[in-house]
Length: 290
Image (cartoon, rainbow, N blue to C red; front, side):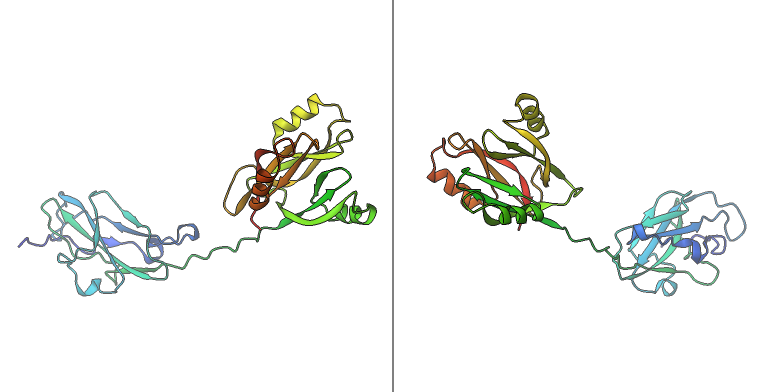
């Protein structure tokens, strides 16, 4: 059996309780144990073969009863004689942990448990991490109209514009079909603008999430063909969680686009109409799941 190293407990002291544990709201589940390394033996001779420290930890307050702790294996080995602290992470929230520190020399001899003057262990309660409630995402409904006269659809995020059209135009010009899908608020994470054009020549609206396509249309078509009206609403350029694709069609015969977030409607159109009536162009952008 190895003889216990005569390292003085008073010379090997845990620092004050107020300094041992730094409570940090951003570091829930952590505890830092600090100590002052011993420099002399009990006979006041210099301690020249200090080799490192064992930082013992557990969820029961018993280190004072089992020091020295040669038979206990729940510890972290800090193999640096100059070390003065060790930080534990991923500790269970809502649990109290108890700690003590033991020094060892190059022969493997252990000191007794360190002391802060009165106790040979210190403790920390790991608080439950409180999650800040997230603001619920606010969506804007997109209202859809159909025109027998113009043979095309119109989409708007404006309730005032929707109500104006319903009150002003007969149903053969613009018939309200209901809420088609949702848009997101300006500034929502990962959102992108949806640009809107009107064509006097074609009597249709055109919508795109592509900045390049918007700029190309503005640069290459006169305003009677495609006049830029501004940002219609906001959606997602790429797919993220809780979103659905919005599908885009083009009609050579109607000279207009059609947009739908319905998988069933997309499939129905593709199997029912020839491509000169409705040609599928792909996913235009993504919208929140209803």
